[in-house]
Amino acid sequence: MAESIKKRIAIFGSTGSIGTQALEVIEAHPDLFEVEILTAHTNDKLLVEQAIKFQPNAVVIVDEGKYEKVKKALESTEIKVFAGESALDEVADFDTYDMMLAAIVGFAGLKPTLRAIEKGKAIALANKETLVVAGDLVMQLAVEKRVPVIPVDSEHSAIFQCLIGETRNKIEKVILTASGGPFLGKKPNFLVNVKRDHALQHPNWKMGAKITIDSATLMNKGLEMIEAKWLFNLAPDQIEVIIHPQSIIHSMVQFEDGSIKAQMGLPDMKLPIQYALTFPMRVANDNPRANFKKIPVLAFEAPDIKTFRNLGLAMMALEKGGNFPCILNAANEIAVWAFLNNRIGFLDITAVIEKCLQKINYIEKPNLSDYFESDGEARNFAASLLNI
Ligand code: NAD
Ligand code: MG
Picture (tube, rainbow, N blue to C red):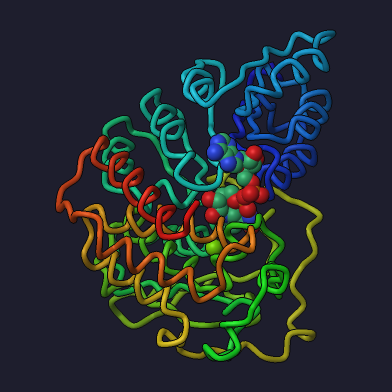
């Protein structure tokens, strides 16, 4: 009996920062969860380790060249092994799980997430790019299929938590907090010389490489504004960004009477991950607690959009809608990849995105294949700019 009430979780992107922390949450609550599916891009070693430990029904290694290795390592188990990008869609179609944790990074997460929603599975959504690219279609399908999309992103989890008990009350605005990243207060003459390893040192959060660079450029906050629009059905002017370097307030909601609710805690993704997996329940854990005697200051300042121009570009894409956020996202993925591979400088990231937004045709009401096309066009154009 106890066995049957465990929530069966499919972790897409289990070898990443969110994926590994989710497995820690699951390990701490063996009475609540069971791991059903694990997927990885290229890290076969960690995928196999995770599979042996958590005994899922199936694993996917997207890199087909690693299939034989994974298959062999798991040959003495019952675990089914799949390989290739299409296998992600195939396992997303399985009946045997209850909730997908969408923790793949980038556009690659969109298709399997749509498949899971199509199948009526609850979604714990870390992969913000899914909503940035096609938030209209994703949320519309979720409504049609009556599927809950529960945010994992800490800001959106904060807003989601602030909205509990407020279903009849209108949101005046949401206030997304941003740490400001490692280059808070810096100007272009400093940023022009910034290197990858410095940009990868985030002051408050330990995350995957792509989102860490996005946090340093403030693109992450821009993507989060677009994510908030779709999750909470907001107009662009209802979404405000404020720099809060301590990352204790994870975001706030202001209601029509001027009252503001905030959700707080130490910067630790295990809390929003756990909350998305256990919602509507709060479950006890041993995570470190915030001690306000040791946090003397909660500071706030306006973001410097003139210096961190990616945020301004994202605000423009949010305002304009259509396929603009999709183009912005694709160009950003290519530019961040190039920066991580030391092909371009920090400020070039913005230049690439700006050129793609100028070049690729605007579509006001794209369908899914338009989004795939715009994504491909923007990637190709960005790559051509970078000679890659
Ligand atoms: P990560 O790079 O650490 O991990 C990414 C995961 O996705 C890995 O398991 C990898 O194998 C898989 N993956 C990568 N490319 C893939 C592809 N093309 N096809 C299939 N799988 C692929 O990233 P992360 O930091 O865990 O972030 C995951 C998502 O969660 C991102 O969308 C990010 O914006 C969001 N997010 C992360 C954090 C955080 O603290 N890390 C916080 C908020 C939101
Ligand atoms: Mg966030």
